[in-house]
Image (cartoon, rainbow, N blue to C red):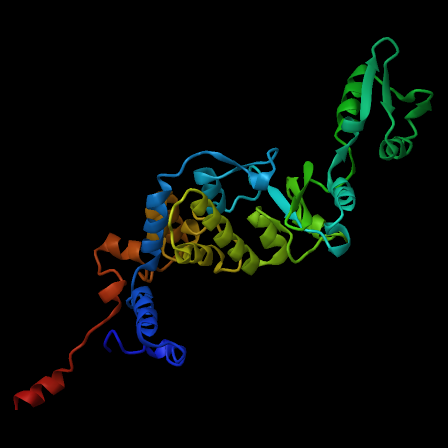
Length: 350
């Protein structure tokens, strides 16, 4: 097939193109073609890893919210590749329904209902050593409702009091102060900002499942940068998409031109089993089917010993294991096996 011929895969899609436009389209398609057997994983690793060495450790103020600092660059890329269960700076972008998105007061009310509120934030604790009494002063209605549930806590004119030993008083002070009275767990702070024609809530902390259950939240657009929460709530395909979007965002912020298809390969490999796997010995590298490939990465003795105990058989289908034993690697021309029909050779000689 010549360079000007239309490849079968795109035949019928170029009928509206003429002249140079058609030639440019075919040329672009040809450039994107990959030879059969190409080691696309190696190319993806090289394409991400090489520019990744130039990444900085800077932070980024999120979407005009000065109070929210998000780690980007290398730390964030490592978080994504390691499939961290709890990112260092998890945050959410919460979009609201039609009733609440255009009114700042209503948006703020939703933000306040989501924001975590602890007893220690709305009450004052004082321990009287002489009388072994813990005095609690508060004007918050949620705090009063909570304290009045305890039989040992007595209501007094200025607040509440609790009698116990000094050791128990200190424990009670710590425990009561950490009690969450309202809001969504792990949502430490909320910020309302206007973007285009609507008000959006940004959060410090993330709890996708609980936030999506809020009646005023637009479930179709609300997002989090915690990929593991996306996996648990929305499933593996949503997690795959989040890996691609978040990693591409990190690379673009660093002005690194990496084709998105390389990140798609990484995301596909991290999610192909149906579970979210990290790229490391606790994930992909530690779960390979090849004994030699696992041993070549880390913990060599353990992998070989376990393989011997359980009688594992290595089928030698990957790159690392074939290199170890000195065989041709099954990539590129190594994927093809050629044979000769000896009987046909004899006939030709005759």
